[in-house]
Image 1 (tube, rainbow, N blue to C red):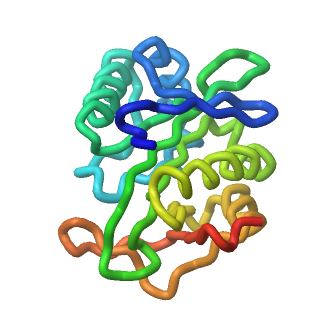
Image 2: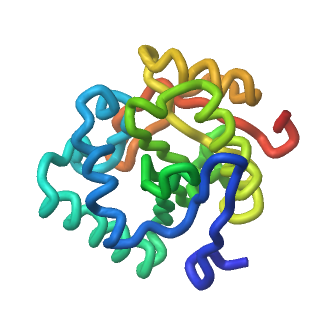
Length: 190
């Protein structure tokens, strides 16, 4: 299946993941303006964007860019919708990565952005369980995600799911070194 021709939606017990739309901008502003959440966002290789957006206009610009990127096959961005409130409480970005380092080759690089009140190990585990299986089907034989050292809930979730710290740091497009990545191989999923 080509994810850039047909974007699947999927769900867990508490969350629906579907393609982000401009209608999500107001909900997502609550995520991207959340100063407690911003430190957990991954801006590696994002040309200095820290994903801290404080106006609806800036949030709409970001969504517009995400839709453009999907249309051009750069990456996919799903909205994470809480089934209980029908509110977008975060996003998942995924794209295929090729690399000369085996840990980062033929992988889906995943960015998970959540509102701080959902930054809990059980929530992250539920979301990543579904997303990891989808990643193996659509993006490669590994899932790679960044977990900042101070993100204790997120770290507990990835470790519970079997993600491992690679031996070599990830290199950016310009050769810069990015730490704090974790890898889950398709054969290691719990």
